[in-house]
Image (tube, rainbow, N blue to C red; front, side):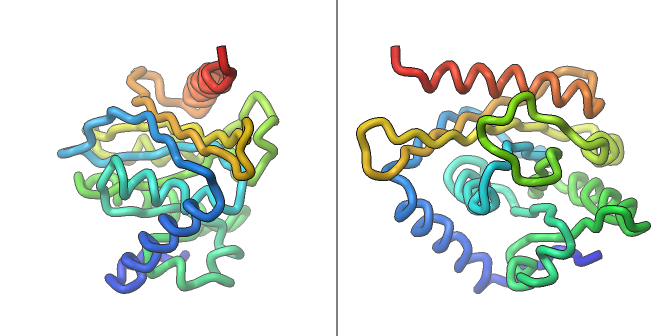
Length: 204
């Protein structure tokens, strides 16, 4: 597997790129997040609907969460974009023995209070209209091996144009606090949150 690195130049570059890229792409970026993450490692779980998702999570971290950023990527994608590894990306290779190593590595990161790991348990990019979201099993193995102080955050990112030329991106974040942490429990709770976020998008 490919482990994450954090080279200061690339960390600064991706902070700059995520800010400027999202500012170009979206009319505005609105964030609803009151999570207090100091003193706890964070597992951030989001909806996987676009190529921009990693940069959306990066921007959320810069503006609200302020953790050392790590993100899990498919190895075939990261291998062709190794520069992403220098700003916190690490790999998982489906169908290989190294999957266990990648999940253990993610868990080990979540024993350090300054760390955040971003995962998309859907496994692949899917239409933003596809519901319910379905999760693969690896996420529960990450949680099982993580610190007992782990904070699990869900985020939903939704674009809407309304009367603007470019979409408005709305991000909402909640903490998952249930004691049940299987993939099916996480999936059910995430889908409830996703539906609530979609309902809140509709102007009254």
